[in-house]
Amino acid sequence: MKKLMFVVSLGMMALLALPGLAQSGKDALNLYQQIDQKAKPNTLVDKEKNQGWKILFDGKTTDGWHGYNMKVFPACWIIEDGAFTMTSKGGGEDQDIITSRKYRNFAFSVDYKLTKGANSGIIYQISEDPKYKFPYETGPEFQVIDHENWPDKLEDWQINGANYAMYPPMAKPYKPLGEWNHLLLVVNGNDVTQILNGEVVVHYVKKSDEWMKLRNSGKWLSFPDWGKFDEGYISLQNHGTKVWYRNIKMKEL
Image (tube, rainbow, N blue to C red; front, side, top):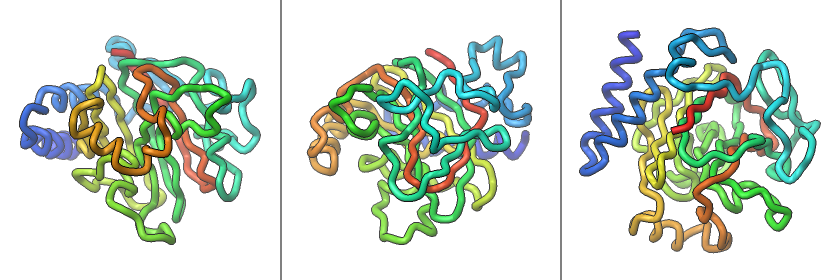
């Protein structure tokens, strides 16, 4: 617990150094501290229940999830040792899995573990519509990747913890391959905070001047509806590499 508190304090100090963003950072870190890191995976302790957290994955069934633009759960995803993981090779973003419900204001908590050179992400505020082939056409992404072993050169906004193609991470608290990382995504109106292993890695205000400049000067120019939706589904991305996801919890704000 002392180690966790120390890491959380570092994350809070980093956020406090950003003018005008301290309160939202404190709120996000308080949400992070509500999660019991020692609890059995895919369960809720009484404290979490009392504070409004719900389980989105029980570690045994696919209830509450389906394939993007599908009525079924895609066969390239399996449950292995109480975690969602992928079996496909190569690209597979058209077979991402998404929540069965849309969310607007929320805290989304998940543990993930990477294999060497793996690439995935948590995509949110997604529109599910046949006119889109991939969730990333509409939703921002909390990047999940083993960038240290990725075969190509990456930009800083592509590495683990980044808000993909927008904001590079302010810190790099990811754990070694084979260890579980804890990710928390907090979306409250236009205020978004990404936390990785107890440290704030990204904070942004959607539709701010800075956000609009980044949105309109890079990759997303080719995707006119990217970032358009304030309510949407949440996706676990299939990039054709093996990543495990477990302990998926949600708190609506």
